[in-house]
Length: 151
Image (cartoon, rainbow, N blue to C red; front, side, top):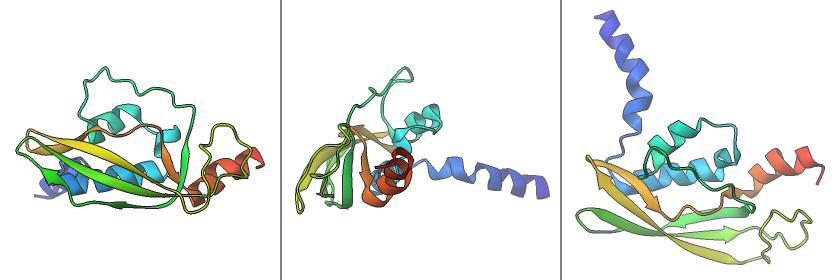
């Protein structure tokens, strides 16, 4: 009995990746992206297996730009039997005075909207389109990039 309980506890993180709703899949992906995990240092195969509806040979392009955000909101998805689409509205951080050329420049108060498409494969929802360059929260930028680069 103890062995069974131990195995279930060990497997719980894997079970959590089988998202039963498109909202949960998109919410988890956006939290991952906003925390800066797509900037490197993570396990790439786990990322692809967890979030994306792509082939095993998928290789995300090396993005030259990042977008710094202060927050985001997710619209209620519009769903069909095999896919859903949801709009994410990002509130952009004022980057007009940041000298780093790899930061997309935005004025205070700007917003950006992106459409994410999610597919239902084997009763699991995964992101099919909409990723693009990383969108990280301003506090993550300040902690992970600006301080390290002396900006």
